[in-house]
Image 1 (spheres, rainbow, N blue to C red):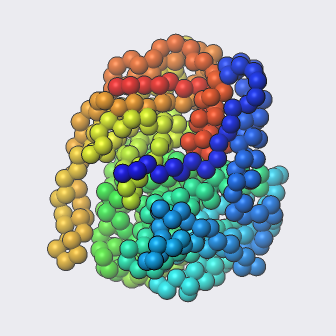
Image 2 (cartoon, rainbow, N blue to C red):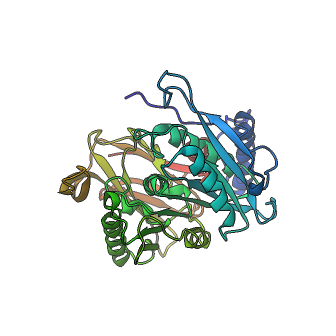
Length: 429
């Protein structure tokens, strides 16, 4: 399959000067690189304007999706409309706001979009900024997780992250019904960007949304206990069991609130979810995390947290990464990365719809891949030795060298002011 270019803006090399960075100048170089990148993004994609309107004003714009990602039945380009604006006071650089992305249900898209604007205005999550997209086309083949929408979300998030009036540690995602399915998949796919996610009235088979990826993202899933359609109740229960099990193994990593609401069907009270989400901030550089690299609508992420995939070890299988950073008593650090292929076996299939409901997984050590591990002063002592151990074998030992190109590459991959990494170790295994 042709690789889709999702890169939205480049932090171009700065004119003149060596690429090596001295530690005492790191903050200055990082600010310069961010300023250049942010300006490029703002000039390339003006999705929200310089000044945000109030959400109550009902302001909206449209974003044309790439024709090779989604088109109408005649091959013409389609657009994604989106409401946007603030609630509870205009955000400023001094008081940046949280930002919510809300995904509506699968009814008539005009009515569902309008309902989204109405209910999002009443949620008690202020001060906040909202982006409320409208699905571009209706029908059973159009879903919130598809490549064309991934392209749009990444564009929107990069635009939000370069705004001084948005808190980069407080991005949230939630949705209802079809938007619940979409936000559960997307939460697993994009967990490294999100402080918290909250699908409602949904329930995905966990092969579509591996719970391990939520190791540092707070997660809520609330579904009616009587919501039997497409086995939403049962699949929500499977998600709860999986996250409960992971929390027992890793008590500090998997914070979640999964609830089957007694006596309720597909209609539930939506108000508690955004109120719950906004209590949590993102940890952009966790010292311990897991990632099952899975494809969504034929596309893989280029990286997760601070690991960029240069070569996948097996194109036909998923890859599981377990990363842990430990500081030793002498000030040195050990970064361990275990890389395994993931083999799924379906253990339960719904006979009516053919939905694969439950799975077993086994793992085998992966070989033949390559990745770049980015590091910074929040993860390791840049003045001390660092060891990188991959699948039990030492891949690097010594002091890290700081370089502009690492800052620039990490910024190009993630577009995240909290993940501008000046050091990197390239690994083949």
